[in-house]
Image 1 (cartoon, rainbow, N blue to C red):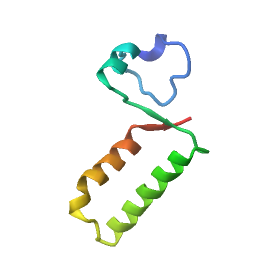
Image 2 (image 1 turned 90 degrees about the vertical axis):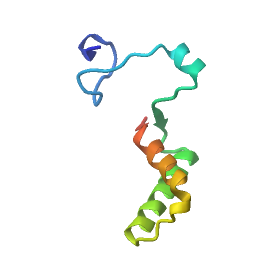
Image 3 (image 1 turned 60 degrees about the vertical axis):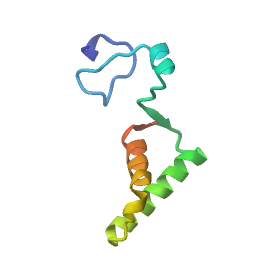
Image 4 (image 1 turned 30 degrees about the vertical axis):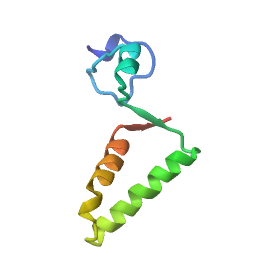
Amino acid sequence: MHVDGLFGNNDGYGEYGLGLDKKYCEEKGLQLVSYLNGKASQTEMLRLVFNQGLDLMDKGKLDETNEDLYDFIITQVSQSKPL
């Protein structure tokens, strides 16, 4: 769908989007975007573990046995948007 005709703030979303029914997504367990509150402890924890992973990567010390953890952290960050 083209976002020009949508109401509200569309800044940062690009020209086109995929519209999904909220109830359908809830029933299927989908959560495509997480909104991060800069004052929330969860946001601070995500920032901390993300930065720790980056530090380990810079030092060449990433542990391949934790690849699922690193994938989860990157996915969380990539699907997050600040409030």
